[in-house]
Length: 330
Ligand code: ADP
Image 1 (cartoon, rainbow, N blue to C red):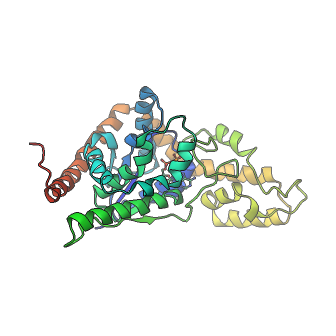
Image 2: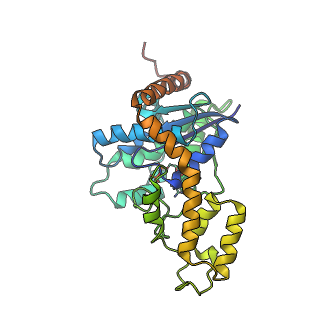
Image 3: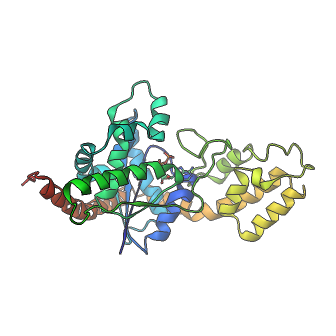
């Protein structure tokens, strides 16, 4: 059975961009593959943060993932800092990663532009990501489109390590991305990708009222000034995309014809989306509320997940150290 690995930062709320671009795919794939899902808190500390908030958000992220359908009996769900081999392998990979490869990463350039002082951890972020994936020797990484460049780097690292230490039979696979049809969800501003750091998100467990407050002013086809103007759904970056994700096919067809024929105004269209979206997310919201009332249960599930992950992680580090001439801790 092939392995998949994917991670998510506990740096903010779980939003529908994460859900449609990645998490929904994890839930679907957990029966087909041996699945490792990691809340990557070491990645989250590459930018300034508050420790108490990080602790809370780590548990909240795990709660959201469980509520979205990650099943600990079918997938290994754990927190990165509970498996120390991640940082150990990242150091090894740092010695095999060309600096130029790191400096040209788009996400580094974006994030560095927003920091007063740029720390080495932010630059080395994709090396830790390569370690996350390769520690489990995962072949497939279900992620959104924004992660493709990082995955290319993981392949470079795997190739460099294999060439140096296992040229006979490559020890690390070169991991490939596995994208969903919804590989890039646009934020409510209609411009950038939906992302917590931009504040253009809809939370996966947000209340129906709060979701409506966000949908009502969301950008639609800019050429459509009034209800009697014919609209073009393909030019409606947010609402039509979300209809396709959350509404049944006959509603999507109805939306398209009513928009083109100027039969529905944008508010009617948004109301229809709101109804379908909150109905689709209701079970997730309810499960999240139940889990949030029992944080000790979530912590226990994460402890068990980390123990399972460590069995694989230790084995990989054992092989890596043996091939690299590095004695192990006794
Ligand atoms: P964020 O970008 O909100 O900080 P992460 O970097 O933790 O989220 O990404 C978690 C997963 O969600 C990744 O697989 C990423 O590709 C995916 N993802 C994040 N934002 C989007 C989006 N707007 N559309 C599709 N996938 C996304």
